[in-house]
Image (cartoon, rainbow, N blue to C red; front, side, top):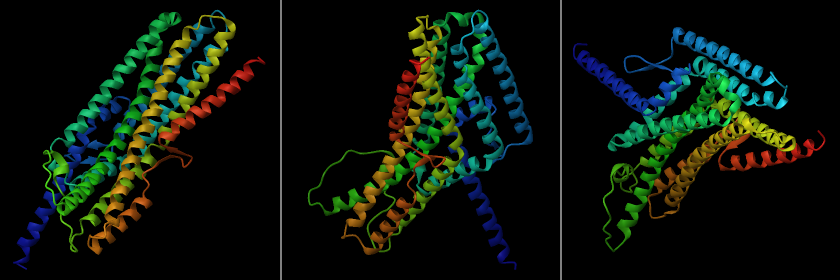
Length: 419
């Protein structure tokens, strides 16, 4: 018993060191998206909290703060919308003025339900995603590239700054382009904040998907490095190549041998990416669906108001702002589609590289068997984002969106002749 005590103490200390290292890696990963997550907290959306370099669920106080912020936002937005409608109905009642408030109402409902869902029901899922990705980074040896997290942080900062600039510019143009809005210019500010929150949620989703895409590209780099070095060993002519920095110089798989099991390790990392993608899909289902709904309502309202002002010959003062916000929400749909399409293309590249290994009969049988297992895992995890199992989020979503909008354009034009 005396000889076992130091060993047990050493194992406990080693496990504590491993836990601390995992927590530090999680915090380092969290810092890459911290600017966007901090702004989310200003809107009352709390995904988790940090305590002693560890991610833990939020407290009841933070949940109460979320409820208070949502209640305040709801009261202020409804009151400001009432002021705008009262001024619009003051002289002549126009249904088009009331219809312009429908997209803002849908966006407000989306914001409230999304904040409640994220803050109250998805704390553990958000913590699990970051902890899982931190574990994945250890397996992929991301620490061999010191600029990996810095580049991710720069992408987040650039996204947040660009988002802020776009909303400030669009809001400023909206205010100066509509003469009727000058008397109630402060009444539209809460609605602008709600629109910005919608764009922020889309940006967070895109950043999360980009995190998976970058790690899948790391797997592709390892596979490509293994294939290139094997081809170089076969070649009789030596080729001088430029030096590359980062993960591409690190060969995780190593040399081909019957005892090499690194492809199996890559299969386990791909399985982690697949599980994380499915978890992200579950978390952001509602946000993506409501973004589609609000953007479609924007397009329908824009088409209807355009026809109204064209037939009536009135000055389309509010039409300019409606068109700008419609373009903005369409850009949100485009960003979601392109981000998910990049993930699917990386998966396709992974499949092609693994197929090359399978078809290389000079490799040991054990490595080709591992590659076959990996290709089956790739088929099992398609890494495709679905909206409540109804729509697939990829580049074809934009085509479907344009097709449906064109159909409704024809329908509205036909109905307008009878009104």
